Amino acid sequence: MFSGLNDSELEVFSNIVREKTYDKGDMIFFDTEPYIGFYIVEVGSVKIFKISPDGREHILHIINPGNSFAEVPLFENYEKIVNEGFTYPANAMALENDTLVFRVPAVEFIRLMEDNPKLCMKMLSGFAKRMRYLTRHIEEMMLKDVTKRVAGFIVTEYMNSGRNDNTIILNISKNDLASYLGTILETLSRTFKKLQDTGLIDVDGKTIHINNISDLKKLAS
Amino acid sequence: MFSGLNDSELEVFSNIVREKTYDKGDMIFFDTEPYIGFYIVEVGSVKIFKISPDGREHILHIINPGNSFAEVPLFENYEKIVNEGFTYPANAMALENDTLVFRVPAVEFIRLMEDNPKLCMKMLSGFAKRMRYLTRHIEEMMLKDVTKRVAGFIVTEYMNSGRNDNTIILNISKNDLASYLGTILETLSRTFKKLQDTGLIDVDGKTIHINNISDLKKLAS
DNA sequence: CGTAACCTTGATTAAGATCAATTCTCGTGG
DNA sequence: CCACGAGAATTGATCTTAATCAAGGTTACG
Image (tube, each protein chain N blue to C red):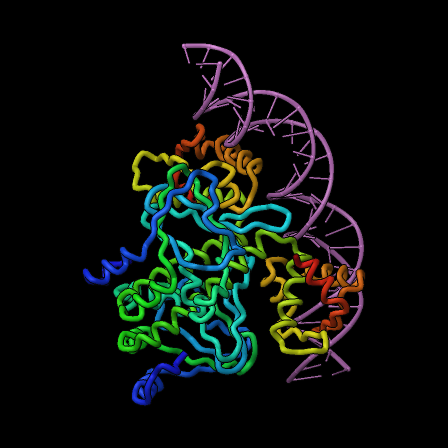
């Protein structure tokens, strides 16, 4: 993201950034509080989620090291940002102890960006990826049943892991995974069992072994 | 969107743009075909949607005059665009006869944008709005039942209409509305009836009269 | 005025949420 | 090093919402 900055700009940048650590379960921000800047995860992981009035939760993203979150409001309306007229678009919670994040204040960052068309393009490109991701997410949630979603998650996760042993290791709780897949813990548990009974996968705690990846892909459509 | 361009740039722009009309039901693009540019609706309306393998459809947006769609792939990867390595992120269909759209070719537009930081910021701001919209959409779909979604839709639609007669006029078919609200025609019909029976609204064809907006808002949470 | 598209209503079914009861796992303090 | 307890996960029984299947009714338009 910052490869378009020259040395002096990087220095400016490093001066405005503040770092902070959180413990597992700590809230980084709520979707009700005024927007002051975006974040970059350095160590640990963060979940971005929404909550319904009756307490049900849906996780939109899991953010891992090297990735940023909450950049969207930066570009909605400059006046509103300086007047703290925007809120964060969702809630953010640290998922691990000693999660380390950088916070980048909005006003200073916008100033930096105005002189850096390259940085601007980088942000656009990041947004585009995020948007395609959200579109895909909606598609998954609205057009597929839980079994397909779980199968799809396993396949995608394996592809992204870079492994070649037909295994994935979950790095979040099954409760969070359920929430991410738009279901609940019990249903996820039953779905894993069903996939195991049909011989497609083996589940042992946080380790999932894929026995038949092509059938799993087919199932996920 | 184009207020940042000077006269000569506007001229360049108007030279690269192509206009086209579609009849109701005509496909503008499929999510399988190579990306060549984005669109601006001038007259009529367009639905952006995804289809599941078994034919179920979910509408992501309804685009009305003055608004653009399919700008996302512009910023994903320049090399891939010129090599036609990207597809459209969803399907687009005209909803009315004589729907008039402008098509803006990707490669030319990117060239134009590179010299216009202002245009770049405009795009970012558009993206931010779109992203907040998508986040809200996911929240609605995942955390609320059909009744809440319908109530919420009516309230939002009324707010955006600028009317003051407690009435909204649907400008899409109920089938499309159902698909947009993540349900099916029959369920939408029953939900309207339920809301009518409880006295919150009156439905007469495409006209919906709101009898009690505060209770309707409360219901939508 | 006839036909096709659009919409409503009813009966039935199925997926997944909820409620409830255990069991498993793992970190912490004694 | 073990025991305890809390959080995490599994399993079962039941309930609810909304999808599906099916049949008619309405509307709009050539």
